[in-house]
Image (tube, rainbow, N blue to C red; front, side, top):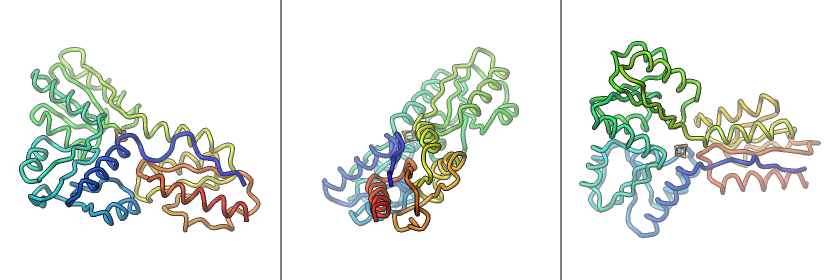
Length: 281
Ligand code: SF4
């Protein structure tokens, strides 16, 4: 049985960078505290916990002798200052793609312009960005919500990095109708999610079963499952190799594998090894 990996899978650039930065902090010694879960993968979080990395919910929980970690989603400048005041050291693992959105919002606000942020107002990434332009920013989920906004002054329109392109384009168009000048529209959607979906789609038609490795609560993993199921009805979302049922593989010749953006390589390798083991049995 052949086991084929999708061309793009697993950790995105920002998550991989954040995990590497945390591992460097662990190697330097001392206690490491991540403000919010570093990634949405319980197996990887367990592994990091065994190395002394714990998750805290509030900056107030940071003690003076710890290294505090800002995860890839980023935080508000206010939270960053609080961490810097409390912790021995702060490791800022904000994804550079998120930093770009923060800087754009900050600059537009400094020029007295309005900022329209298209995304989920409750998402930590959005909360962080709003902190860079708190008095000038409107967060909208879609074009329908833009209609409820007041008139906008020379607006900047940016997006949550994981937003659907069409949602962003529709919202940007709606902003145009509300603006007193041509809006500055900057598509800040990150391609990581789409690249993984495109690669899974390309492979799904060529295999008889597809294993998607990721958390059941990870939205990008669930979406990957849906993409694979379109062409490969025998697609399974699993968290670990232990969930593979050998009976599902009986008589199959080609099996595909992909993984969500929070799935570490060591978990992916375990699944691939187990599939090969079953296939060669
Ligand atoms: S999905 Fe994109 S923006 Fe988000 S952390 Fe990964 S690379 Fe950065």
